[in-house]
Image (cartoon, rainbow, N blue to C red; front, side):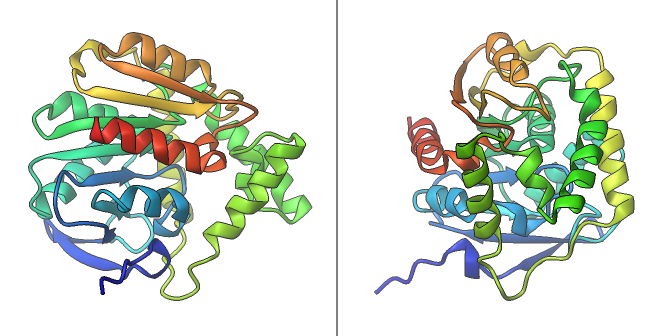
Length: 280
């Protein structure tokens, strides 16, 4: 009998990437194109919603990892999205993959765009969630929004993601609590938290991305699924619509009464959409 591993108990592995140790987890079938998950601001391996990972891993090999200087990965965290993309590319190549799908959430979506534009033969399909293009509206305000909500969360004894990722409606608050509880399901061999220095470096990279000159997104010829909540405060939802308009082959999904973490609030629907997209 085949025992299906869940993200909750997937072992953490390490690999040498140009002399630096990167931490990662992988699960799901060995066949087909692997899906590389690219993480958000301040996130480590344990910040992926296990329902999203397990849902996609039911049909595809899923690989999550800590980029350079994040969590259990060694080195110094880069201060630009371009450098983060180069490190992610080096990690993918170190694993021996020459064809991958990318699922980039928030900051990870910025990184995914750079990889797809620079290495078109490597990337088959893209899922860009809770993210936006270089120079996108309000992206340079992420630092102030984040720090304010971290303060608010500290004063109310909550996880900052409850404010940053979800609406403050009754539905949003319930979804936020459920999401935070899911992140606690893994109780053994959890990842290290991000360091203050790495967090600052990521904030600088995001700020600079928001101030960048808009990129020519017609260079990204891959099929793209763009997903977000319709009330994203961190990376305003208008950026998702902007991405979908400017990418040559994109479809847009906005979830109602949902914020930055719309794909986690609507994880069942999102997993279905993602699987249909990846298999289509």
